[in-house]
Length: 200
Image (cartoon, rainbow, N blue to C red; front, side):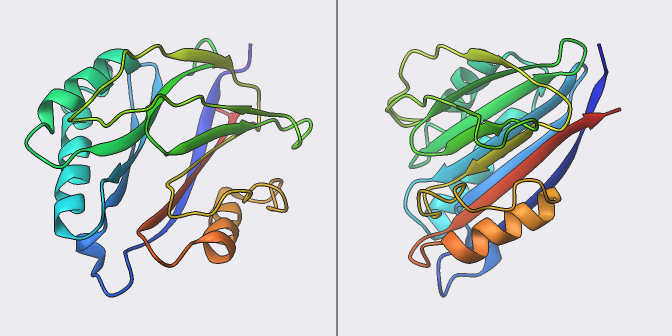
């Protein structure tokens, strides 16, 4: 089995008129003992209170990036209870087994685009609820990852249908920039994170 590493890129913008520091959409991509943890967080609403919730979620995940996905979301929900809460999708990649474990709460898209056929995609089924306020029962799922598969995650500041004409065989940065430029709503914070899994 080929050991896989990753390439990462992102594109984001704050709510119109807000500074980047006030952005309520945040993300974390951090190496773990087994691979990499990826989390995309959308603090409810926008402005400083949304940013506070999102940054608190990032801090909660960073406390131990090696926790399983279910434990991560449960810990995060407790940690950000004093904030207005957030929508979160999180993925834990195990490089040795070439497997992605993921789960989501709320409206943050996550999907894997297959390298052999970009029309073949695996999409995360997120649960309804709010991390930090009303956390549903977390049931992570797993998906196998193959060389050059691409993970795309986006907050609801990005309009739906963004994968249809995206240049999915291009570099992660080209993909992220294309989606963000052409599909951001312009009425909310917006964020796209793209990871490509490549031979180590």
